[in-house]
Length: 288
Ligand code: AMP
Image (cartoon, rainbow, N blue to C red; front, side):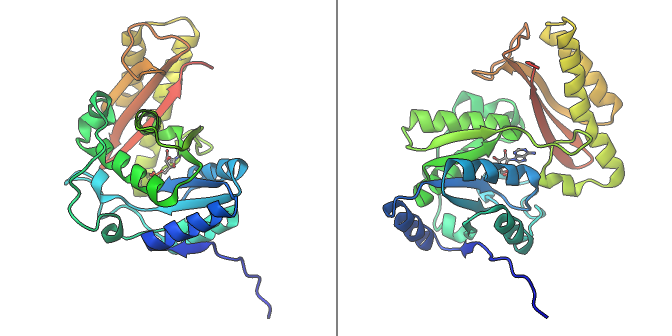
């Protein structure tokens, strides 16, 4: 019986091979887009691929669970992985090459040079995850150097990360366009995340309180409450009632991610909370 075969995207493991592939495509005049991920793909990741395909004619997706961005007591070892499934999903969505290096390939020796994110790297997610953003920025800069993409697509789900990557590209004059895509949510509002796989059904319910808290804050803002303290209070009530352990809930300016006292249409609300042992994040612009 004839089986329909979907052509798998090229899988590249080696740094040298990735450089050669990219170099050849660039010299042939192709525009390359990079979608950096840690794998265990969901629709959020795949929406980035759609944007990458709009922006370029060659799409590289990297899949690398980057040890440098995990703290000693975090979930590096249990982070979900399924390369075979990821290759299938990436292929169906039009990824040309999946670059999945080993940790030894990306960090062949001791890493002594790092990209330091500065003050903002120690706030919000950085306050609870020391060293996280320097790990992220360092690996993203390495990926940029290996793949040399024209453009790279990130998700607004990790707003502080996208902000710091834009800043790195600007301040270090990295020749890459950074595109930031909207958050993709489950039908009930939960922001998609590979870490949602950790949630049991009861925790999955509680996890909804992040999106609900953000919705409550937007609703209060829409009816005229602009006090950041009062908006945060409303959000905290929702999170606490939902059984989520708040790490932070802040209203900040969209252009600098610094706290504001008065919320405006240019403010963003960011939240990180624990549901059981799972750490989840979400955010929303207050502008409707
Ligand atoms: P990760 O694999 O979690 O490191 O995510 C890889 C990229 O996908 C990052 O740029 C994330 O911001 C983005 N991403 C993850 N979840 C979502 C989502 N629900 N919607 C949009 N982008 C996302």
